[in-house]
Length: 410
Image (tube, rainbow, N blue to C red):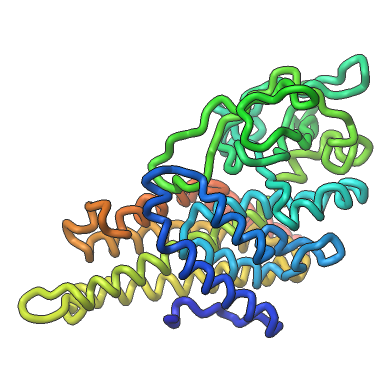
């Protein structure tokens, strides 16, 4: 274990530290040895996911009363960092699922919490988060997926969603749809629907008729978890499956999902740190073993400068991520801190991956070396939970708003 692997700051409870150690051991034994083969085949690794279930990782933030681990956000991001260090795709299985857990905890009705959370905590029910559409990514208010009330009182959904991680294996997809096309402003006419489906089936039948997975996207990196399209063609959803139920949740979907993206961005930042740690590790190993001009290349100043920058960027990214998690744990708004963490961590991860790639020289371009996969995986995190441009917009708007509020107070 290197200094860059140690959780900083350390979790408060000894049991949390023991869990992180258990996750690290699982990563070493089960994930790292198979990540390259899993990436090459793009086969979903059910056996590894089963191991994460046994560790309780699908229920990290779910309270113990619902069968979860009841962890704070600081401990959760430490775990996500460890998993991403082993294989970012396995962290990708967890991240949208945990984001949906946050949605149910934050905005779900008591009946919805009782119905969904125990199965989600146990990993028996995987969840997916669906905002993007083929023509609407960061601009979520431009979505066209619609929900119309039918004569029987249910809502019928029509539309095409894209970039849904867990989209095929999920049993429930949290879908943002336009329930009132005339609402002003537009986001007040958007609702989050809990679309239930049969995991691993392309076309829904019976009570799941009208939902289909039309494409499992063949990605450049992050190839161990499925990312899909989802088409809704008259899918029938009762009002009880509006997030928060119809009385409290109708027209609140945009606000609900944006609020939970704070947690998603903090977790995504931890993924960036985990990938960066692994890039640093393989670069250090290569630099100490590869020799030129009669000595290991790690003894050349040019390589040491790269390693120094990599380690510094990693620690800064980790501390920004942990700070955002601490703010979240205090029950405060963390959009500024989450945006800063995701902005810095994603760009740092990509720069660290590139430097590690350069340290490997021509070998970095060969699929025989781990850095080739890590470089592609780092690229996959650039747009996760919003690209850098969106994070800068969030940060800038928040700073201007806070400055204006300070002026009013003075």
